[in-house]
Length: 489
Image (cartoon, rainbow, N blue to C red; front, side, top):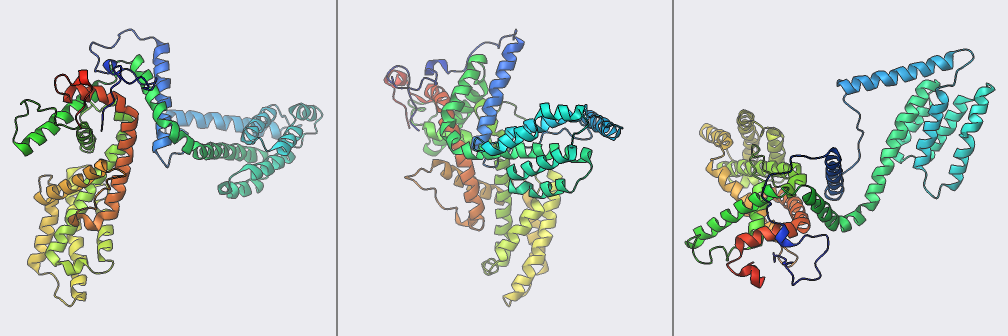
């Protein structure tokens, strides 16, 4: 990846990217006296950045209900307040004559929520809403004892049926079966909240292509605002890149036998190779290490999940390899047999990576299950089932995969890492290679994993490339490189 140089020769550089000489890791301690308004402004900036990033990166992003857990203090207090409101409303409506003191504000809230769901094209519906839910008229009907609350509820329900998404049709039908006004309006408010979220999510889905186009400059500008307010916000990123550059140089020196500290030692290191190594390191990040790079923090949960998926695929491939080696390739070639094995392995290993003891137990059970599934396959091919010695060997080999130093697990893990590395290095002109033969049975899963990982990485590089450039330039350029603006590839 060629590194941009904005030190003066590039007059067309975007204005939302700071000059490179200001992007180095700042020195000194953060300010000690921070005003409340500064903290609130910082939090607002971070919240907007995270929300925009989630909308763009997460294809399944949806706004969800934010109700507190029922067993929490907030949940219990909320439930008590709501119950008190509806109990008072019921008491007022059942009094003689009925008291509509709380019913009128409730109708006002319902009208407000319905109005918020209307589109500009809903001219006639808006007029009907203003006519039927005319609050001044409703107040006059209350004073004269002529308010038809159930009639208004029927109009509200019919209007909701027109505005709701098809997924809400069953709930609208359930509303029409309610005859108690308190229960009816309580459900009306609940369904209106769901309809509001449906509309917001539909709007986000519609705007997402436009948001994706604007995401890179927007996130870059927002992060620059954070840097201005919190200058030390690149410290961990700098350390992350420094570690990757050191590891990359050591790897190259080991291949060529040259001295890392020799003349031009850093000049042969490609910035793209350093960045790719840095991103690959995120898949094996030590959970105890709190120095996670700031520029990748918004994707930490996604990258952690991908790292766990990498480990799981390596285990699955190792089990398939051991089973094939013990039972012969003919068994693996049986139609549908590998698919059945993959389902069994994935099911038994699911959730077992958190603790070493769980993984041990899962692999022991998996060894037993492999023996159970392999024997009928061998018999169907006209051969004898596995001997007792073969069964014991297969169980033992699979059970031993719990050790991270297990040679089979290590080799398979390196193959998976190599495939992901190749996926990062791919480009429109350079297609990613197919998975190696030993990973062939897991080809679709690996390709999906590589695609997800590459998307995250390429988007991150597009946004934060100008922030990585000065750090890499300082680490990799030979003496005099900054003056000439030449950057090694």
